[in-house]
Image 1: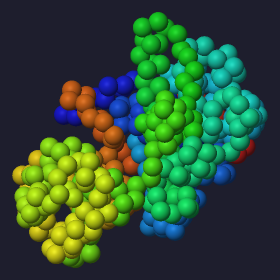
Image 2: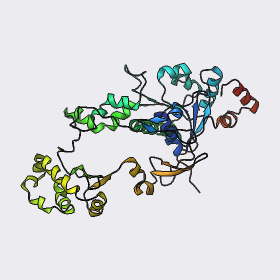
Image 3: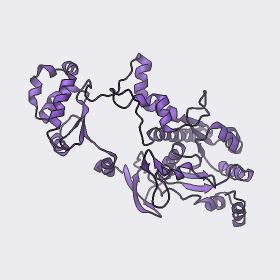
Image 4: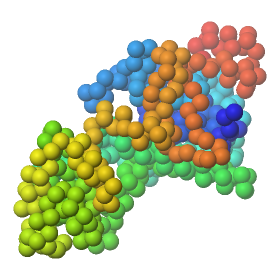
Length: 407
């Protein structure tokens, strides 16, 4: 028997699109919450139409998209025209019976649709009202549209990655900052729900794509804020510590070595690569001399690693105490045994596609396990269920709402 999730019984209404808001809702669904995604009856979530992303095909054989599925696993979907009074009244009815509301719409859109915080608190004073904006609730950018790469640019992230020897900024693909902000939003919602359980009072939860980017770069930004030192981008050929670097092996694959404690691990490293002669080379006898002669040492290690294929090095390093790992591409990472053993990648049944492998919940609990309860919902799949079972509408009323294109 599968144990219930830790937030079972919590109902969340989601009016959000693309990644940040929806992904937070999906995280809560994996913890047992009932998450009802409210979509426009004509357009739906914009991610349903995202058939490509950064030159990668996103469409699935059943007509859904990878981005939509990723951010909406485990939810219910209903359609509702919130630009009409009848649609707003239905939403207000749901709000009165719910615990939390999630959105990533801009303030002007929230006001226009009648789903701003002030309006919803008239229907449910103690609801947890959670917003993930692009840039924050205040300041000149507060009502601007945002996407992950734009926030990478604004937050300094595009000059934090890439090679130091290049003057060009480097953009990361894969919605990393979207998912980071979504995690912060879910974190804030859980904290607000816990506080409401203690006091009976709901509150607003605010985060943004930009706040998430700042948080993920806390060490980098604090290095500047506290000491006015810019953290340099990595450069492979001239890195200060060649034991924190990656090397190409004989088969063309790469291997990462990451050992900031170079004094402690210099001897076992040299022994593991079969180059104990380096221990007696005056250029490399201390951390300081290795820094001073890092270009020469990287060149030596390039030759060493190029002599054998990666798997040979991995077998040779097995049991070593210094830190290392193969540098995988996404296809290799997806098949890594460590991901499967810890259920970072799981199987979920899709009604139209069968068993599908996808990324699992980001945390696990021993007594009340997180799990993906079901596949991402089809467009408006649960509209009738929500109207009848939660709001008590008759079938005649449901039919009338459909005829008026309100749902």
